[in-house]
Amino acid sequence: MMKLRRTLPLLLTALLAFAVLPSCDKDPLNNGTSNNGNNGENNGENNGENNGSGDNTGGSGNDGGYTAEEGLAYVFDGSCIPEVHISVTLGQWNALLKAYDADSNTSTYISCDVLYDKNGEQTLIKDCGLRLKGNTSRRRPEGYSGQMHEAGKTDWHHCHFQLNFTKNFKDTEHELHGVKKLYLKWFKDDPAYVRELYCYDLFRRYGIWTAPHSAYCRLWIKVEGDPKEKGAYYGVYDMIELIDGRYANAREQQFVNKDGFIWKCSYGATLTSTDSGLFGNDGSDRTYELKTQTANYAAAEAQLKDFILKLTGKGDESFYAWIKQVCDVELLLKTYAVNVAVGMWDDYWNNKNNFYLYFNSQDQFSYKFFFIPYDYDNTLGTSSNCGNQSDSGRQDPFNWGDNGNLLIYRLLKFEDFRKIYNDALLELCSSSKELFDYYASTARIRAWQDSIRPYVQNDTGEDMSIEDKPASWGNHGEYRILNPNNNFFLVKTQTINQYCK
Image (cartoon, rainbow, N blue to C red; front, side):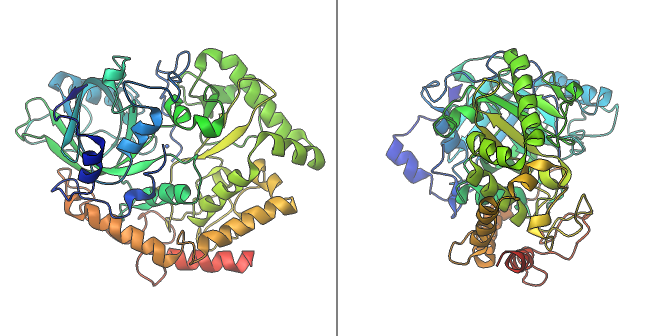
């Protein structure tokens, strides 16, 4: 890692964070994340990276001068829109194109250099790893199948990327202020450029510390030989915290133990079957994919299977006592209240999809588990005929999904748990709380959009403007998030009041 600008004293750095710069404008809302610290993608992230501790090294200790928490605070503080400049040799870029042509689900890494520019403080990290990301949304970053890079007349395509700063060198010099990986997500199917950012921000505003951090950035990719000095401008992207060992490190105090098991749960994750074919740690698109502590895979699989057997097999009285021992029920139900409020239909309850689980112990029978929300772009009026519902704005929040996906259904059978969920939904909609309330939400959204509006046009020619509408493929194209007519926040608040008061 090479500093191109002298690191300023902490006070001066804090002051500079609020300066208005041509490419790093202050976010007046601070993204709601500065005080803290993947559409069913099971995309082979392990790829040999999670051997042993799966990055669970260092804990909250000092990593090259930065703790995991400090790394998150630096990258995701929302005080400006940082620039991410990726430089790739022609050979490496063509290798990525060939890998995609051979397998459109490729998780192949290529080598690159990354320049991260925040408020003029530039950090250069050489020999990083870059790969494509996404499942149904994974695509070729340029041209058509079989076509290699054409400098100066490139047909660039928006796509999702993952940066692994320590892919090739496992040292603190190859970290971004303690951050080892970043998910760079294109605003696919979100003309408003804000849905996922809004949702993760709402989680954290409401005290759901398990939610990943996210923030805007601007992305350039320079392929060797391209005529533009900075390379191709890919536009505004969403930087999202990866849910891996470093994620657990940054939350060690809340988890109590950072060396537990993280499972990625993709489509089909009902938490009802213990069929061994559903579980894996080799990046082979299993329903349940172990992301950390993979050297202890057998213990992790036995623990998750024991959890599923108890979830499905215990009688009501026994389940009630057990779930209070192994789960922060209030945190889980408040998490789910946010999930339902924002209209996340592609979730565990409705579509057995898109969540992570963290078990804070490697003991098969003694642990706490935590539900981690994930992948929130299909929200805020992007609705679908899926599972139990056809309108994410008007669906009964107590009948949100398939009750065969047992976890939430079993919790809501108990009056005290049901009250937690009911009260959380009402609290989110309360105008005095300024959380999901229409006026507070639209104010935040307008400020975020204003901060990125000058930077949206890009060299791909795609997604060139900010528009107040949901994804084109959704079944309720009338929903809006700013316009008061057919406004999702207003419709959803009315629905919640109807069922919860």
